[in-house]
Amino acid sequence: MTTVAAELPSARARAGQREALLATCGLLLSLWVGKHLANATGLGDVIFTLIAGFQLYVPLWLIQRAGESPESHAIHTHGLLLGPIAALRGVVVRGRRRRRRRGRPGPFSRLLAHYGRGATLRPRPFLEDIGRAVVVAAVTFPLFLVGHHFWQEFMGARYHGFHIPDDLGMVLLKQVFLIALPEELFYRGFLETRLERVWPTRRFLFGLPLGRTVVMASFLFALGHFLGEYNPARFGPFFPAFVFSMLVRRSRCISGAILYHGLSNAFSYYLNAGYHR
Image (cartoon, rainbow, N blue to C red; front, side, top):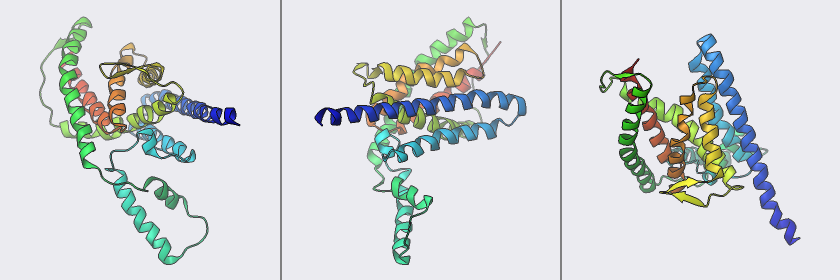
């Protein structure tokens, strides 16, 4: 009995790992097909919104089906998102009690019961995450600027100037909430958590995790950028993915990684706009 009981967590962890890898294969297939469809039809905004929805809702559904909470996968922002859901859940639960409804609750009530329970706003750790992301950006962005400049010159591009664009705020909002949020939730929150249970990380360098889990998750993350575009430079996100992982592991929360990821995307976007061939 002791041996069987000891093996059960490992079997469950491996099943969760397989489930996460299958979900990732589904995402990569969606990205590959979606990019080709976007080029052929001009419906890129619709297609990539659907793909972002896949990254947001499929992990949450699989986590709920396993009887776990999003917090167990670092999928939270210290109550910033779940706090309002908790308040709404309270209204629903009180309403059900007043009406004394019986029978099986509907899907909306079950969702609130699972994701809203115990959610409270914790501003101090949230602000610590944001501050940590800003500090990491202040350290890494100048290094990236120098490396990016030499890379562009090596590729034959010339620098023609940089200016603060008028649409900076809109680009930041898009990069943080429509791109960084779903990607960090899926890759660092869901996928890495499931991989880590089977391949625990034991080595770190300057806080960066070095192990099979982060290498695999970072490779799959970069592969999603490469598929459908087939430009070797699109494997570049493999390296910052280690920094995203470090930020998530530091606080067991994806909020800092979301901000740093979004800032990195916006910074890279405007740097590229300053060069032409």
